[in-house]
Image (cartoon, rainbow, N blue to C red; front, side):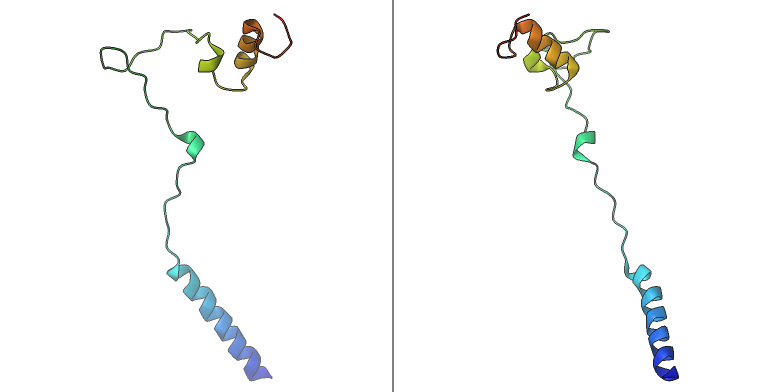
Length: 84
């Protein structure tokens, strides 16, 4: 019985020491929501610089479901029955 316990203990110890050495570290992929958006280009072909404080006033160009989107949809009368 003692030999069996010693053999199992040695096996567990060897497996525990060998496992981390065999593991390979791989870089974590960036989450898809963290990717930067492509810059908007002007007619001249270079990236357009946004004006300070400027916000697009079309609901179709806003982030879907944001509070600004809901407010703009209400102003445009596109909420299905609600009037501005």
